[in-house]
Length: 144
Image (cartoon, rainbow, N blue to C red):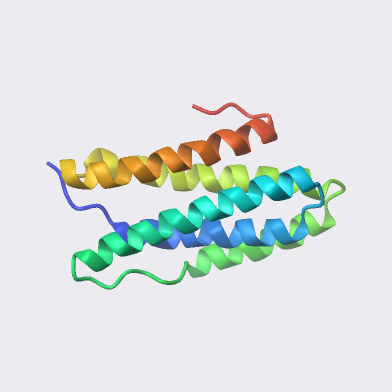
């Protein structure tokens, strides 16, 4: 049985992820990593905007803010990475874990979605897979 995806929950989680990327971008030192994080940040902006437009098109009000838990995780990540001996590496690992959760949420919603909703999510999922691959290659972890 299919159902409508919880776009606002995905939007909030995406905003949480984007906020962590912003914090990381302000702290990492390596120029190539800065460029990659800026690119991923742009991808998340696009993803969030597209989902917000989808919610708006249904006559509902799209989420505009992340979650309190996400804000706490982001602040904690900033504090811990600030004390790390290799700040760039610490941020990569935080971001890889965080985006994995976002990717899993999208995959779960897509598995339960109607055909029309699944098409909308499939576009976003391909964007997330690109971020996932980038971050896990940098982190030296497997991705699948």
